[in-house]
Length: 212
Image 1 (tube, rainbow, N blue to C red):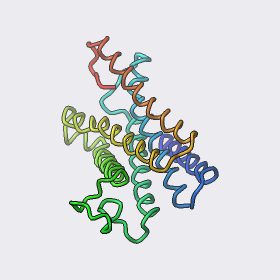
Image 2 (image 1 turned 90 degrees about the vertical axis):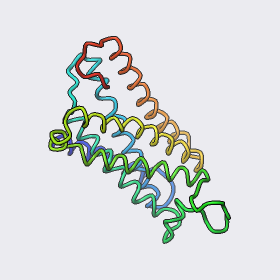
Image 3 (image 1 turned 120 degrees about the horizontal axis):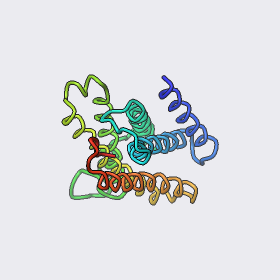
Image 4 (image 1 turned 135 degrees about the vertical axis):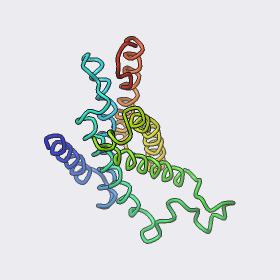
């Protein structure tokens, strides 16, 4: 309960800051607040294993804190997706993913930067939802440690999809320096944590849990 309460308060503060400081209508600000809160939760989730390695603490296959924050990352990302799909083209949500008729593209799928960003974001949200569904002791027992861990490693391509989605939107919407800096900082945190964790694992191959 402490984990979930802390995550709820943190996410609420991020969304409140977005509502108070960012331009645009309420839906846009809520969507962006949820997006940055989700990326913060994802960055923390992917950094906790490295923190354990640096502190020379056991790094279990499934840790309650890492799993709970990961669940909040999924919840916030799905919320961002749901709200974000109502910001543009209200009433014609398909235009996020399908080419507008006036563009006369060779296929029905929208492949311009806006469409690609939305496909990347949707793929990331679906991956997070899938990981959330198996983030339980029951799923771990049913799948077994090795198979469960293989599925959980989808968090790494998920992080790549999330960052690509965010980079394209930063460029499309010409975000301000503060938002670009915040996004870049979170992305660098993820990359640095994984890089440090990889070096720690390589330097201590005797560890039973090798994934940061």
